Length: 483
Image 1 (cartoon, one colour):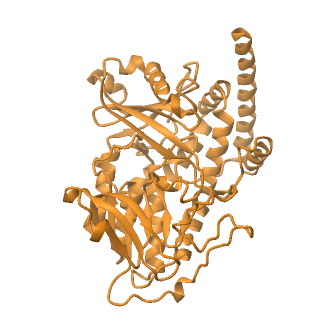
Image 2: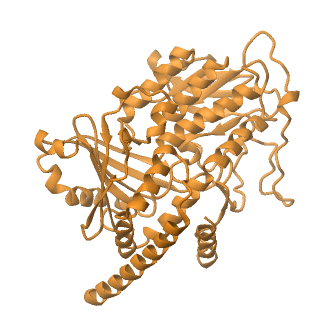
Image 3: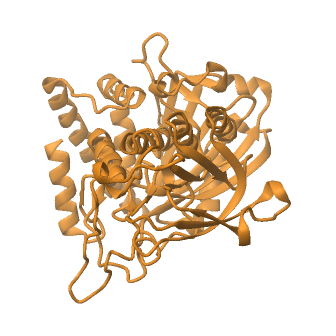
């Protein structure tokens, strides 16, 4: 881990665009004059004296609520929102969950780790496919089969987001949360975000023919906390610039004979043709496959990358019919700053909890929503006390402690292996090693960075260097041919 960290730091010194980060919160840029003006005016931004830290009161001194429970608004009904709303409602907190599109199909590969099934009590019939064979395909179409180290009963679950999200929202409703089909418009914060002043949330409720709920289309919350599951409308107001990817996916119904190939198999394609900084995928669903790709660095070319992904997989999806097209911006990597402000916080995709390299986000979204809700239930003593910023920051500290190594390792891997086709060839070659497969799957399935055997780690380091050297030599020869 130390060598990976030092590599990233050295790269940052050479290239200012690769800024280091502390934990999951990178070193901040110069403050944006607009950041937190509406959300936390107790934070002075862009003044001659610099940034003043917001005041945080200890939760123990927070007043008890007389005659009613703590109110919480959850904006966004994906995995983070559903998990948060359920936990809050079960914890005695009055909860409202606002989701713009209840049948939303976010462009998402839909892979979930095995640990999520048990941890979140997901029924097995929610899972379309149990993938035990993963094929990694290099830029030169060298294919490596991954999954030989999986044990009995181990698999990667494939779900449809519209099914998973609806299920988690239904559990939240069953626990007592009010689920509203509505469009979040804006939030008005009190002068002192950690005081007892009211937050006012503006939204339109579609269930009432487009009419807004509350007087003048507003809902006034004197005691509330919000989880933002949507980033639209908050850029520039919340935490400055942040990286986001464009994900593009097509649902393709292919002939039954070809669908049999994908019964327990998923494919990942790497190469400049499918994405300069990510990968293309073909993931199986109940009666179709999801074909997609994503990019942070070349968003305008996303349709070209998608066409290249289809071309690479053409022999296996030929004759298929596109039944749905999906595209969406997705923040990638934890936000550098501004995740919590007063009694408002971000979790899930809004907080940037999509990993680099693998692009995983479902588990971390649901986990962050649940952990944040648990911190609120704990700080409010089951909804009987007011909460403040310190309660929300407890969730951040706990999340960082658990998952910082995962985000750090994947960030470094993307910088090393996604920088060129030669490096990708080396990456695919490395994935053929059974030790690499075991370490990778153990870390993915159970969400922990698994300590390795020192001797095997040394062998892996030597093999990785050898792969990179061979790939670099290949790139030089290919450049000569191109010239």
